[in-house]
Image (tube, rainbow, N blue to C red; front, side, top):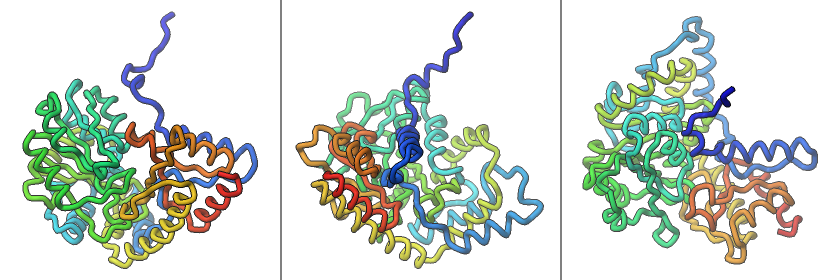
Length: 390
């Protein structure tokens, strides 16, 4: 009798690191002792605005709100995203043809890869970078080429090195992510222009993953602001971080009409649309006033100060100018690996901090602290670490 085997593609990927690690944390909590403080995952713990919640509840009471919806999203949701881009980024998008709502932007990574990349095609993936860029490229059979982002180069691509990369003109897609996760390096108009110029020179589709532009950042930017960007660029955006709606799974994919049409072909064969009350709530959230973001950032700013105290105690160096939901720090030289620091903190102090190696080889000397815990938990974490003699 033959043995049933999985598809070859899953042999190239592992279970998502946080899925595995959070199982370990759950086991530790079940085994007794003080609960582990999770400073690893970037899941916002604030609630959405009142108008968002009210819109959800009001629409959920309608008898016609519970059937299948269009996979392309409600017209008012598309218009809401178009208005949002105009208001905050100064970017004009045709709501009918130049944007596509997503069930969170993470699914869009798969949709874009399937729409543009054939098995064997080359894809540029940042190191360090979001692990899903790597895993999806592997699942789709792409030839993945890691490009270096380094501390010495301020976490920006070395465009001279990329221009001279063997086979560069065979690359189909390049993933970028500014403000950058995990390093927190901010976008700048100059950097975004260099990225667009590079993509145009080599006719590479540039995909900018942009969920952090409002977090601890007074100047939100979009790559689509750059002249000519729509010719070769796609941008993801998300309500997970900006609007504290991570579990609501509301994202967007923006770009020129032809690109959106190709991505829509994939998406329309994968899902059957989003729950209408959630879309209605997203429309309300997209109209949040500036004060919503200011209040949220004030809270994150207090948490950042507490996270910086943890980094300082551990002897880690960090750039105070970084933005986003995390604090990224370089570990002291006497630690052989980043896990040599994070594992004792987890096991002895029962505080979970993310080791940087999960984001690539250029993250091996770094750790990341999430700001998605109250200040009191941040301070308790520091006290636990000190009490454990770490």
